[in-house]
Image (tube, rainbow, N blue to C red):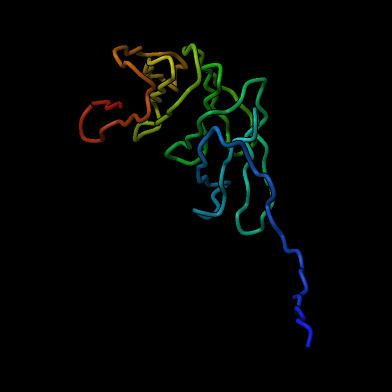
Length: 168
């Protein structure tokens, strides 16, 4: 008696495929007053893709320049997203139309962390160059450059109740 194998029919289903680079984080965003948890922003080389998780479709592409994305951080109001690049630049994109009107250049190497304050008026960036920079988004300028770390900045946090910044 021979041994028989029963093969189940393979049917392909919808998949995302390759959706982004592995150098940067993934962040939930809110598009045009939409639902929370429905859209994600992912780095894809020098661009940022906004994916609709429910439909599995790309809904917006934020056009980058020539350097790879290393960090993403949505603003507290959900209207903008800050994008850090491998050359140390930071650009702020509008999630309404995908345009970038604000850019900051202050780091010498890849941006490793970005955080907004509670109001969304200040931005802190950390980098592999061991510097921390606090940016004023409204006036589009740097406020402080903080030095003293001996290695890459991995975390930064504005404390809500006090005017303090904590970095690691």
